[in-house]
Image 1 (cartoon, rainbow, N blue to C red):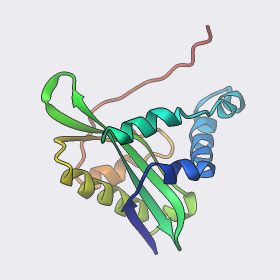
Image 2 (cartoon, rainbow, N blue to C red; image 1 turned 180 degrees about the vertical axis):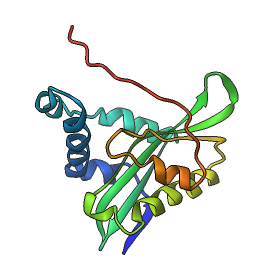
Image 3 (tube, rainbow, N blue to C red; image 1 turned 120 degrees about the vertical axis):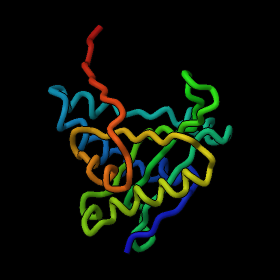
Length: 156
């Protein structure tokens, strides 16, 4: 069984192998220069740590038999267009492939949602990549399509 909790960001940092697995899954699907981009993974750990110190970051962890098998990281920001609106903006979410079956992925999203509601935010934004596309699970728990972002690698 998979359990979920709010944990310090260092738990994600200490499980860099999951970050790398996530990065490679997303990058290899979408970029021609996947190998070069995959090698460029170098998180700004200090930025995450500082945001956590400022209470501007929350980290959710999924565990199976006490092993970390997933994470979701959110930043808290004020909406630049509506200063009264506090936003929880998803930076990243990952669940190991073998843990995505049986409703665990949806349960993780629901857990994050419930915990984020407790913080008092008015808007929760999730980033969904084309693969793996978990927008169906988000729609099932009440989310609506809100934005579409396109990316293009630029060589300068």
